[in-house]
Image (tube, rainbow, N blue to C red; front, side, top):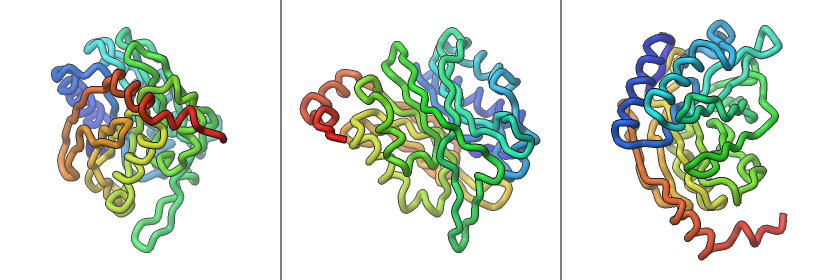
Length: 258
């Protein structure tokens, strides 16, 4: 997606792309970070909702309508302070029940020569990870900048995780250098499928998102990759047999000492 400041248009786009994925037979769908509003960070508070607000209601209905597990990207969730929000991802099951909530732990504060972002000025960090057991296997959650911190994935009980869902708005500057390397590395070292749904294109404050959403298997093989300049739905098979095969032949998780 290339979400912007028009919340209704963003939600309609998300619903349309969810429908396309479901028509292809997808049973688990992942949307990008801040899919319902991506603009100036200082405006997130104005657009924040509760986890039972209008965006959550529409995503619940979409999961129920298409009978899918839906990782509803992330959106700005109201916090206890008036000046900051949480960057929150929800998971819904095929009955429309919310089964997971994750609030982004690592916040994107960088000062590159041509990219300056200070997420922590407007977003409060979460403190807990989220793992949902589903009919498709365990689905763990992380968001965008969390990808750079291997310890967050290692904090999960990895024997119970089949895939990691990663909504993102990874920038073009950092994405060109690091996106694919980091996604594949997290999949390989943790022996899981990684579904990384990224924004693409320029948004309001002039920052460009990288696109190139990825689905990677536990061996690090790229099963599907989107382009960087258009809306796109990518799909791939998440094979639990493949997961077991990789973990059996290369039992690195059982060899851990720390």
